[in-house]
Image (cartoon, rainbow, N blue to C red; front, side):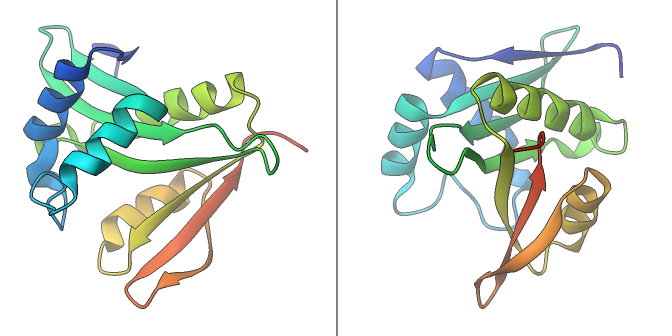
Length: 151
C-alpha cells in the first residue's frame, strides 16, 4: 500500500496515543492489563517503536520491537498491531518489513514473537511473512521465529 508511511517514534505521548487507538484489535487488551504502565515504560525506554500512518496521518498500526540481544542476535516483537479497517490491505506485511529492516539495522539475525494459539489469523499472517512455530511459550501461546539474514 503506497499511502502508508512507517516512522520510528521517539515521542512518549505519541506512542501512548497509538497504543490506545489500536488496542481494540488485541484479543486481550494491552492497555487494560494491570501491569500496563510498567509494560509501557519498558517499551518507551527500550523498544524500537514503529508507527504506521495513512497520508492523512491516521494511525494504521504499530510494532514494538526489542533489538538489544547482542549475544543471540535475536530481536523480539513484543506488540504488533494493524487496525481492523487497515487489515487485508498489505499494511501488516509492510509494517513487518519495516520491523525486520529495523532489527537488521541493529545487527539482529533472527526475529521472534509470541502469539496466542486462539489467534489463528495472526498465526497465518506470521507464517505468510516467513515465521515458523518453534515451540510453546505457555499453554495458550506459541513462539514463532524467522531468520533475517544468514548468521
